[in-house]
Amino acid sequence: MKPDSIKDRDFMYKLIIGQMFYDGHQQLALNLAQSLGLSLRPPPPSDKLFRLVTVARQYVEDPESKEKEAVGDQFGVESSGLDLEFDADVVPTSPEPSLYETVYLTTHKGPCRAAAFSSDGALIATASVDCSIKIMDVDKVISRIDTAALSESGPDSHHPVIRTLYDHLD
Image (cartoon, rainbow, N blue to C red; front, top):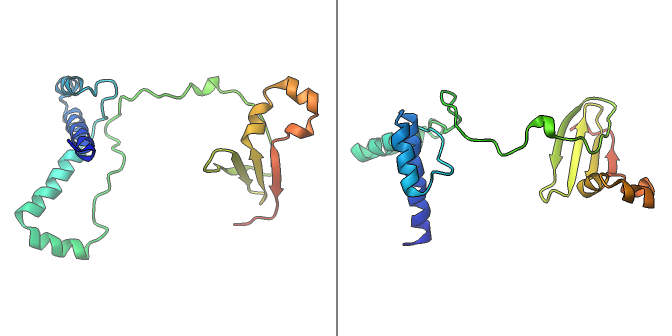
């Protein structure tokens, strides 16, 4: 079997199990997930399979009329967003927020409204309503935990803020 077809089958099985959960057949879905080896992380309830079958059936029954409608109506496709009717029984993997510890605190003159990491995770930038942007080195933030290293080489060598940019309106 080709690797792509294995991925497609796995995706199809997840759609089937998700549809079973969505339709209220939990025990049947759990049995199928266990027999397919998906019992550790069963997919959340979803009606995506039903929507795909509905769209496919429309094209099978009358393909010519649907092609004309599809050309005129590019944005009429129903999005596959979050279904608020069902709660996925997914166990969170992150620790409880009360267990987090503040390692480094920097201040802006106004409220901080945005923060972003670089693509490699080495830098973080914070932006505030006072039109300033602070760029910090993540490694230096983490190294501040080690207080012995901080006292040996002085406080400025481990200062995480690399640069502060002012007067940035956009």
